Image 1 (tube, rainbow, N blue to C red):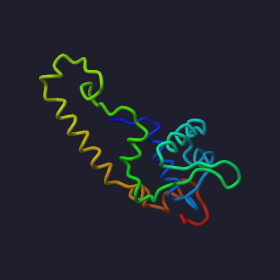
Image 2: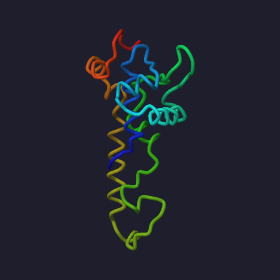
Image 3: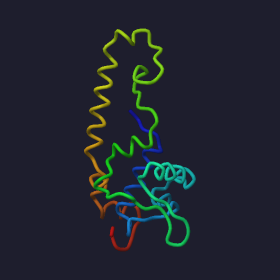
Amino acid sequence: MRHTQHADFALRVLMFLRVAPGRRGSIGDIALAHRVSRNHLDKVVRRMSTAGLVETSRGRGGGVRLVRDPASITVGDVIRSMEDDFAVVECLGPARYCRVAGVCGARTVFAAALDSYFAVLDRATLDDVAANDGGLRGALGLTGPGPG
């Protein structure tokens, strides 16, 4: 299964904020650090705000900030909030056109696999995936004091 860029960028935003001084950053700074489109990142951050993962504010001292403790944000939370479709096969989706959908056992297998996939993602927190503070801060070009 491959996730959209929205999910990928959302996780990158959260990792940036996890290691950023004061756990705050501007969309421009985050886009520059990850070398991604500011316009695309703006859309992602708006969706993240709606999902309750971040808070945004305008003006001097504004930007994007975490609204929850990084230890309480799971990778599963992020993926579920950014993706619309988890039907890895047609029969897991809302439309079922497969002729053997009612008599085939594949749906059960793929549903169990998806459950297992999310069980792993739900055990991994933002603190887990961003545990290498120094390495992430260096890779993102962040200077100054660490999270506080």
